[in-house]
Image (cartoon, rainbow, N blue to C red; front, side, top):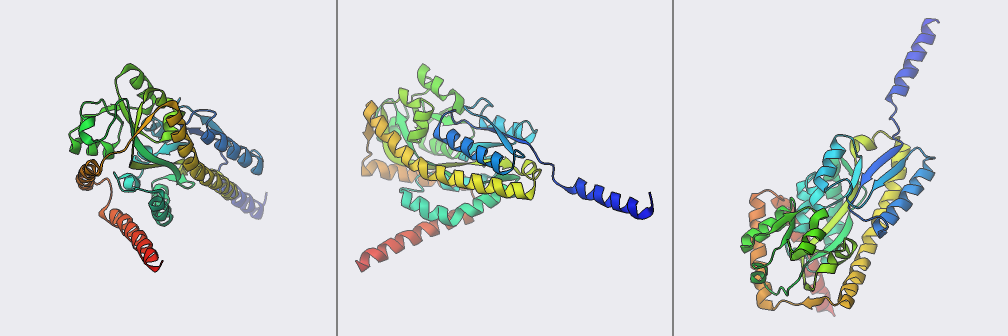
Length: 340
């Protein structure tokens, strides 16, 4: 072998070595039950990706929380046992705490406000997640979180005699409860149904569709019709694992999963309304707080938001951005109303 052939072979070896290793299978965990609309759409998307990449990229899902809570799932991702997950706001907060800005208490009162702010801020949150090592394919709506209980809850004082559930690691809700003088019961998502069945907890916060999907609705009698928090989640893949597939396959995955998340984002709002109607048919009664009770809740929420600032749950700049967008929306609406 002459010198030119040797140089050529060395160059070829270095080029091949520099190509990304194509991961044949992404292992993905989720608390979503198998058979749920989320899992159905994700499986359809996974099938399309497999077909378009000619079997170079496949997915294996672990639904129903069988891989543990989000804390354990993230640990398994970091050690390589999993490659990604569908995470709620709380799970995402372990990666990028500032993402919780959407979930501050009483920050949004309508979906119009949600849509206006998200259209202007989602891209920044997705970028923040990627900078911290996770590829997101858009943000999926969870919806408004309501108080659901076994006795009517009109006001904060009604919660003081209840066993209120909070998810593990939910700094925002914990701070709100602390300001309100309420001692909650902390449990992982996977233990909530058992907690309701045994009486360990009597009150939960949830979206309507999530409550039905996880069978929590079977143990509640009342829903307080005040949007307490806005919840969202998304499907993320660890950037290190994602970068092991070719650029062309990455483009396919981004395209397909981006469309899937957007479809789920739109479907969730419909599912939540359908779930609410299902709860009413089941006999769940709506509770509407008085203006006086709402004012008390607003004051407690304001104190909690200030306390969360000290804990650095969000940056002042991000809160100012959200508030500025909401002010702009309300000013535009007022100006439009005056013209009419």
